[in-house]
Length: 346
Image (cartoon, rainbow, N blue to C red; front, top):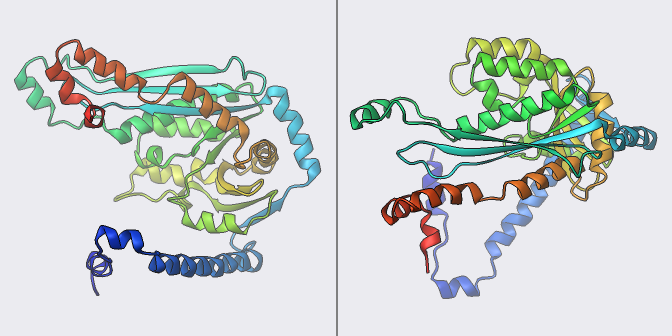
């Protein structure tokens, strides 16, 4: 079988710039039309599958009534629903360590003007590497990487969710409640945290990214406004391990993780992913849907509000500029080594 890379190279159209400007993209247009036609067939198959074999395989399609939404709005506007979101910024790594800033915001409709915002600053110190010999020895050890920083942010988001869950009726978390990065890690610290989230029963993950959930995208295309569909039952159905599965991860998936369900919901034009506890999913979804109806994107408005708060409090690039300024004070040589080269273009 021909290698896919070789096939990509052989099927690529080469042309000079003048030809590129004159081209009407006929090949691309044909491919788009072919893709749309195929997508319609696939979505039709998914819709037939839901109605013919859905119940048999655990799929559960629910259509919410106006009365369901009206009751949920009372809970929502009384401030009993809280949204949690996190944001991270990790400038370029340098010899002297790793710098990262993580902000976490918690907000409800009663606390819009005074949201809770916390900041965690990650620094990896070099106290154990004060000589070049120590540095080369320690550099062989595993360093904190982008995944570790993301997992730390998710951990702190869940920590904020657990704090909010003590008094709020519902907590909406931006992103997965059962983040794959924490489940893969096989860490006792992570699983203890995730088990507390599951035990709370009132924390709902709202996921925007469909890149790792192609089937959920297709299921979402089948929904009508006001509907949600439970697709997966148990974390093990959607969190697949890379390589050998650890014992803690396997036990978690078969134990507490089996109580979490995942699916898609649609308030208006757009649809999104949710994760919720199996015992409370049908009480939570009217609240999620009611808030999503406040937003033209179909995303719960509180989630977007938490994201906007973080954007204002932790604007992109600010933390990196602080680090760069510190290096600049020690001389241009240090600054030019670490600054983004795009900033130096004329």
